[in-house]
Length: 190
Length: 190
Image 1 (spheres, rainbow over the protein chains, first blue to last red):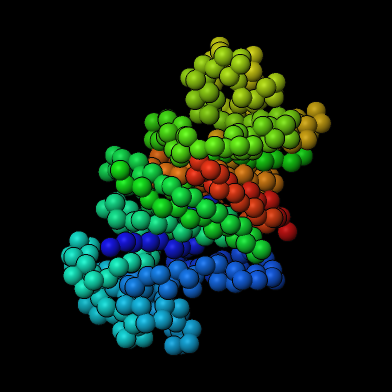
Image 2: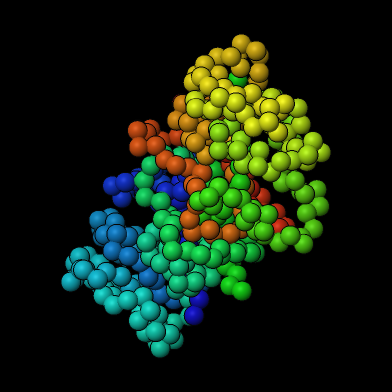
């Protein structure tokens, strides 16, 4: 099974402000730009390529707070697993979309493999770092919003235990008309 | 006067390992790639566009430790100012190339303006953050080395005092044959 990251950060590497808000993401860049075929910056094609999603509690809570209508829900019928060891239930407005997973990541991976999932979408800073640390991420798609926040929650929280670099290959990059830049890499595990 | 940043980071945002080493920068990416006209990833054109350089003590010390021969020195005759309030002298092997500046950044800027400098190259994590915080950086050129280090010295150390986002525009991006990705932005000050 393959796992991919598809996430937006500020150019200085933050995925949210310190309070978790992502208002800056909507305000960054040139909103009047003609995006042509790139209106979704690759999101829909990416979503079509995955068959499940794994996120942490914080990301779930932000999504829940958005209180999206079924029309606005960006993930279609994608099964979504929410990692949390402390939550007992999910907020009511996401229960039909998400499954709470109180076990460890390795157990979830075993389950997904058993159920023949092929490609997982990994979302949220801590969850992404955990999957990177487990050497499980195969593809990184990073969309840089043209803004410097100066402070916030970093995408890469770092890992003091790390002893080995992870090499990336098959780089590609595009600057969109709205001044967002998207980088794509595949991860090489020797 | 205009100030630009031209710096390489790992994809997870580090400019050096925790001990300051940048060995990973030489080892990252596909070293056998045919780089064609992009062998220097834009460095020489950038260097030609600036007329002075400002860096912090740490960056100076790394350069000094490289102990480069005149042939290897990458900055030509560019006047280089080293910010340090504690150093009394520079290491002997860089004294002919660099000037120690013990005053504040604002005083240095006044001096550079007085002497009619036009375009400064800002280097080193703390110095870059200081110039960003002072709203002085006009152009960012970030070259992402295709590697995740997991830990190290971040380019953007963040600024807890920051209250205002900095918007970027005129984005461009290129993925080089060696799998390095370079992003360029201009900074918009409203």
